[in-house]
Length: 185
Length: 219
Image (cartoon, rainbow over all chains, first blue to last red; front, side, top):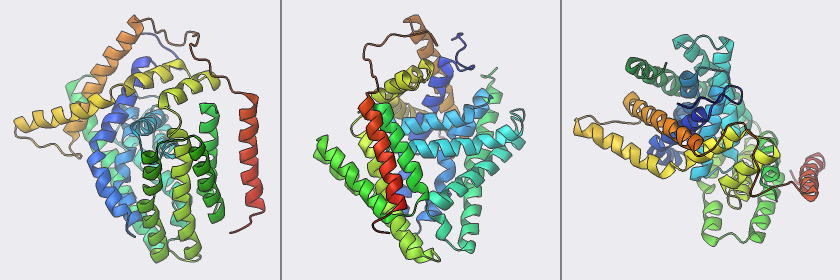
């Protein structure tokens, strides 16, 4: 086990772990990205965007739950974004920008609990904040501001369901498996 | 040009065009990126790929705002169309000319990104080819027990995390035993200073964009 503790409590092992998880998650959703790209080429793009968004945000809260410290969620998401860029994402450097926004969105929920509630409540808050932050970002960056109110509400609900499933229910189920296996002290 | 400076410019401009609604600025950024990449003589295949890849999502954004948008939706539809091209081409000026290793090493020297992060990420990137294989192995192993794993099954993520934990432990130990010490001062084989002209060019680009936004020639 790696014992050097630098910097700010970040060990080499943690950095490698979060980057590997980011790459793994990216690969697991790889096949899905083609479906997304197919729908994203039609006027249904905002729906495709909001149905799939939860998958791309999962690395963040998972990292938070594994390391349980301030900054882990944001960095987990940013590492995943850099990994995506390294693999050759079509979005190039812009991936990092969305990684930072998504990471901060998920982190806020845990921050509101003072990084103490590593349970379903913290996870629920995190899904809530990431839904709000990413949606606010898309109001500008993705031109959501042009849609009428009914469509915006529909998109917001779809997004919350997607983030709730991937970053809430699925992360909770994975954490349960990890706790049962007793691999994290 | 220094990779940190280039990354800084690309991120700043990408952030800025996320909030501005100037079609002509987006087009100018695409044309400038195009000229820059032509000057760098990148290969034709990458060039065509970068030209075509934004077409589908750009059309998706354009059509959804065109059909579902309200207010000034025709203008906004073209803003989004051009913005997606601008994102991809701005990103390409960095990713098509600079390898990720170079970007991370430049960040280490120029903005003092801790070496734990730089070498940790670089080490993990070496596992990219193995990770695809590992996921196939996980899926096949489950199939042998009559279980089909989907991307929504917690088990596949659990196994991926188990593997990541094992690999990260081994890799960190291997790096330490090969003399890597976290946070210790390092000397560099390849020194990457930021030349003054780089900062000048960066400042000019940012300034020109701001000036253009204040006095646009076209909408």
